[in-house]
Image: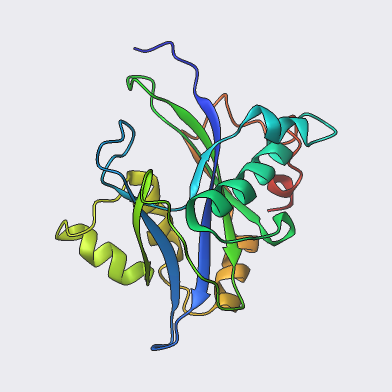
Length: 199
């Protein structure tokens, strides 16, 4: 068992309505295959919560810092500007102890109602795709897309939603998914997150 404490992080599911079918699409980014953590995997935008993210929060608590990190990482990895008021907290994942790199990650959903341009840096991120959750899961099954477990689970959770209205109703009415369920790294009220207690 590893005694490495997980690094706090934030991830954003950017969703838009498809222009070709009655469905939603989410943004997946292809990580550089040379990266140690999830190299070559397709992921949602996200990354670690930096000291500057904490510094921007009057409370210094992890949840408001996670909101700042989510906005920053979306801009850095995809070139998209979002506002933290758009973010809905839906899940929290902590990497199992036996792995060399661990993260405790806040998951958010962000609906996009206007067209946005995606720009990747070709360094950490090599490519991007807008894809429906159902199509992404189908490609994962035949391994044309390699997806981390939290990404797969998130896509399964939202696959039944075919409009932004449905998605946001699902996001606000469903319980927060926490892995593992008894995670000591998810203490929402203590960390400044009141949204979890509203679900």
